[in-house]
Length: 460
Ligand code: ADP
Image (tube, rainbow, N blue to C red):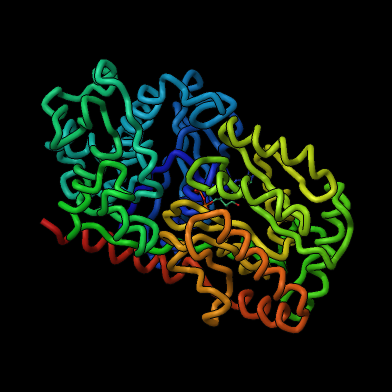
């Protein structure tokens, strides 16, 4: 099968969140199973392709080819989508350009994909163009379209007066296509013009068909429910593994768990926290967005920081940065706040901490809980979306702590439960060994994507 994967971020080239982890790992996993895969991403400022030709960059990793669409005016910027103050105002121009170029490049390469697999709103226009502007193009006659929704809350909404930027006929500006309450909605267009849709966990696939989680698109999704599936994300154990991780202080494994505590004490020292193996240390690596439960966390922090330590790594909304800075000033020896995007600190948090905080209000899949497991760090989660599919409470023989409901009280209760087990060394070690043995590898997940591609080819 020939697959074109289109994504605005792909690890290790550019990353703001889980989307990049997924589109970074899936291509190799598909390739191992015999698919011919090419990946298409914008050429951002810090991406250095192995070679350049015309206005494209190319990097080969094994059999997978990564193509980078060049336009310095659009993509040579400090951030991918915007600043903490807001999105770049020309995002529609930027991602229409990217999407058109992907299709033109496919032709130039004479690569006729069986399935064009777009991810999120930024790449949705690739599928939209395929089914509109390019619908009678012989070259793409057999190409089917798939879209993955990594987070329904981000839809790519633009004012109507920008419509001509896309070069699409106004025939498609109606409620059955790209229009959403008078605006342009790229994700909606992507859903409508894709032969098949998936999202990143079975629970989220169900949730998004309801008004509570559907972000206004639940109706569209219900209508397409026969073509909507949930495929749980996986993680790349070549990147995330305490035995081989080059970014942590000392490698460790189930057989040498005491070395996890070397990571803990060295990290405490580096961060200026009280160096103490016996104090519960909780970590969080996150986008600072409403989704991630920063509100219930902030109102729990006074309690938590009097007893335990917390390390947060995150970038995002100024509002949350400010709230968290206030706490960091107050609890200097117990709270380390790192307002940056930093792979090394992220890896060190997973390795050093005893528990990992994910009190997300909603969570399409979540990768951090899977990464935490691998590092023997128990996740503390609100049971929603992919967190529901991956975390069972310790009380029910699972490997994490599940909040009773979305509230500060429940979060505090779950953290105290984590602390109680942590104090009991025998129990804690047994738990760490158990979660480190969990397996969320790409092998199984890639099979599910292949089944989805096959289904896209058979659907009328
Ligand atoms: P989302 O995609 O909603 O951001 P996920 O849990 O699916 O959440 O994936 C988040 C990914 O991004 C994880 O690999 C996490 O370690 C990483 N990440 C998030 N914020 C940062 C940061 N500030 N620095 C480094 N890595 C980060």
